[in-house]
Image (tube, rainbow, N blue to C red; front, side, top):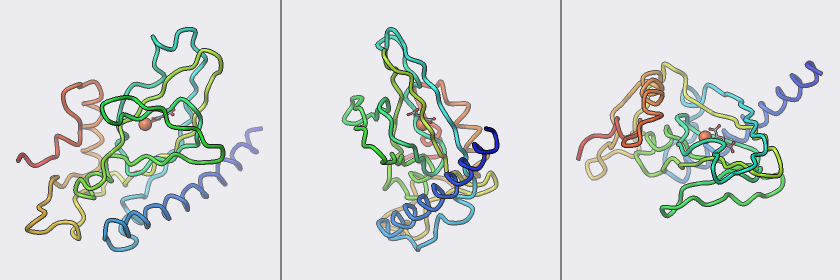
Length: 193
Ligand SMILES: O=C(O)CCC(=O)C(=O)O
Ligand SMILES: [Fe+2]
């Protein structure tokens, strides 16, 4: 079983990587940033997480995973009902489409795009009848990578909104702020207006 699983995970991860790089190139095109901008250090690390949420007798009292934005660059997960995004000041369920992926913009896309893209706040709710497993891929910068707004998006009229920071420092700030209701890691690297 172990060997089969390794093979499946390997194939899945390689395909998800290709998809991610394609999506990132489309994002470059949309932003007006040179193709391949995210292809090296900014997307170097790929992580795979399986979250398992047992069924819960009282879903209104128990969240699967509390509201958060992901610290990495781009998150790709297979679509299973239970994911919600915070939109228009309320939690909205993500419609479940068979064979579709959900793509979440994460913190590093917000900072590199100079705020043009916003990290999506999301959470997972539990369900009283069925258990749920979500398979989530995190595309992240290398720890040494310096994150800053892309030069192509910065000008006199559009000054940088975020300070440059090494991803390992950002990650430590993110961890330190996980239970801070008043500010986020991204906010701590914003230039004060
Ligand atoms: O299980 C889910 O649908 C959400 C998982 C998630 O947001 C995460 O692992 O960061
Ligand atoms: Fe997440």
